[in-house]
Length: 312
Length: 312
Image (cartoon, rainbow over all chains, first blue to last red):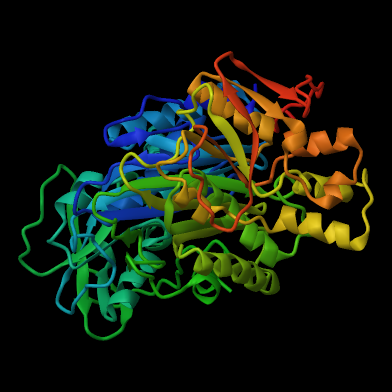
């Protein structure tokens, strides 16, 4: 099967709403919403680094798009479409059919059509670029946090990292516990509805992809403020809560791969209810630095850093 | 050096015109031109397949962006920005500095700012996604060619493939000849001004990336027509013209990596002069199929196919 057959068979769909030309020309042609800003983000996933070679390809398809949609969510954007560039060592039709199924299922559920891309031969590599829209001045950025703001997080943190430790053989879980954390790692839910509902409410927002400390650190650096973070308040699953405290802290603070939203808002802000739990986890302070404390306000030693693709 | 230092040091620039938020947040935020359509294209380049490991990194930076801009050119789009996702085996500062220099020089010359992206560790892989704009209904597509239209091509074809044959050791050239064809292979010029000038004039257009036969074939398939192509009319360098005829035909018809525009226009159309030579190379006919003839109208046997990343 050649490159063009491959695209046609697995990835070609009729253009969606607002897509004048989809897959199959030199460019896709999209119709922007009048007055809206255009938001773009791009993520590259490499085998052995971002995913295990044994992962279910349908889950990989889901996750490859989910981590990109999570960037749109962090900016409060409405998805409009995405491109997929795919390097494959060989054409494996069973793998491709499952990958496309997982990918396009999330694309359909997110009203985010595949509009173009590229396929080539090479070490397995997936690069997705997503496009979305937000009204002028309402994109959620990292740079607006102010002293006194509350820090909030959606959902739960740490399960994806706990699953990775199971795969690494450093932690053992029972079947049900492993399934819970494995699903968190392999099937993250991009918080698109939450991000859109937070337009005009948050002062800063980011998604947790490299670990809470590092990603919150980006907000602090961009906003030129500091934070006090209550580690005991961090929302976690019962599976993670049953682990030793040091491991919990590592997973919660430096785990990464969570794809939850961390955001800041003034005290008393009316936060939206879109069916995703929101937990207050700390406070923005004027003094630079990120101080991790327990529920009694005592400093917690952690020695943890955020994930960096060229340091770890 | 970590991932974020790397981005900051080599790729961070102040946001350009129409870019509200550039590199450094979860998404870039761009301001679309009111009423314009939004065009996107994505290409992935893999070491050993799209470029040789010995290539000058500045030329690689140029080419990685050029092949993407060529897709915008083929649609008649005005560039607005691009994202870069980069997998690197290791951080090599000399390589990165040169790569970024070549990349950003073309970006500046094309008014196409880098607005975001991703860096990670992995087998060398470059994925660029470009964004551009065109007025409604004026994007050049593959689908409008009609019987009787003339077929035109910009610049010259075949030099990039001839250079590849020199690298493969099947052809020997003198120093000046090699430099000519090597520059064609490593430093293609995206025909952006030509593409924009052709808005409203062409009936169909494409850029020659996989070889003239295959790419013209995409126009024929999308337009449901056939063509008669005059191989003797195909524009070529003196270096290529000095090679055996069979090799000339292979380079001209199936070479690929040319990044010239092939387009169709009604007889008598006023073609723009943007300083790029335009050559008439054939005629669209109603009968399906692509017939290659010589200057006397006699059929030319070639047995050539277009380049396919999963067939060759």
